Length: 165
View 1 (spheres, one colour):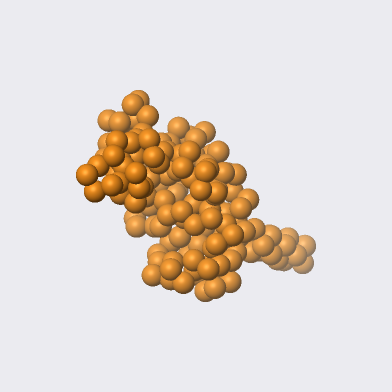
View 2 (cartoon, rainbow, N blue to C red; view 1 turned 135 degrees about the vertical axis):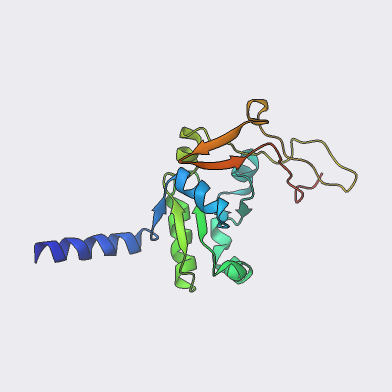
């Protein structure tokens, strides 16, 4: 009986916290398998450094962006923010709108940085002829690959074609 109550409390807590949480290493593995990463931080926070290929949807716009994100309903959607709190709330919003494969980046970008995983920065690259800017990553990471739990993510090619000059 006590075990059943403990299990029920755990499931309630997990559902309330936005569902399953994944470590940065697990997130890399999921992204290599086609998962979509959604960063719910502010524009300034996003521009100061974000995970490569992250889609930026500020937390207060997640409910409205769910329609745009519907094309990813069959994929794993990884939500992230600075600490994991805002993204947990955003994950609950998507779950309420029928997304079943939503996970939260445990510890957010703080945990990502603690594992020395790379971030890209908007707006600091050279302008191109088409009016976009290339994102830059720290020189120390340009030719380095990340190997975590047997997962390889190349960081040599960085292109943020959506960043306007």
